[in-house]
Length: 237
Image 1 (spheres, rainbow, N blue to C red):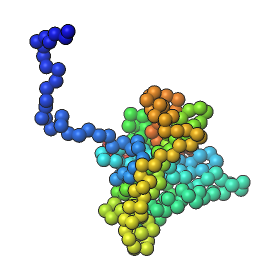
Image 2 (image 1 turned 60 degrees about the horizontal axis):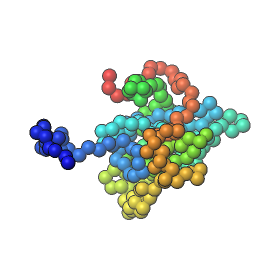
Image 3 (image 1 turned 90 degrees about the horizontal axis):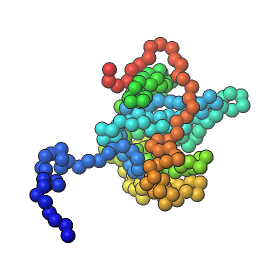
Image 4 (image 1 turned 135 degrees about the horizontal axis):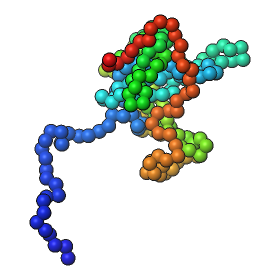
């Protein structure tokens, strides 16, 4: 038989504001549509000329980086010429329309606090794409590489904050928000590649995500940005 002893209470109710406030992470780690502020955009370019646009963004007060989502050029051709990635460039253009940016200048060298423990890291920054409030639809994608599970956050679409308009709706000035509503059926979609299943991923997560990358997309092997002039510093001094 269990005998109750006169001991201190196991727990007591608190009405302190901090204790009753809902706790939630605003880190983008699930499929969905997120209100974000793109604080800065920067480019990674591989040795073969493939370029991706990355974002340093704020989601509900949580600063984070979205790597490798928007590939705007593929590897150079045999003559060394740049080859446009049509899918990535189309999505990039959607962002330009929504942000009302006519032209993006060549990248400049800048520092972002995205290194280890928030240390500064030198990047090839796109100054015309900074401090942009948008809605962003993200879809999780799982794949397998060398018998290790890879998790990637893929940007599928952008919408204008305020009226949820897509790029096409802005250009055509018609039915703002209709595309956003139609896309609701895709909001929770997850892509499983290489014969992976939802059960495989559930076990992987339960096991501490051992044997695979988690969080953002795999970072590209990029050249160190080299630009003339002074380095620009982003963020707090």
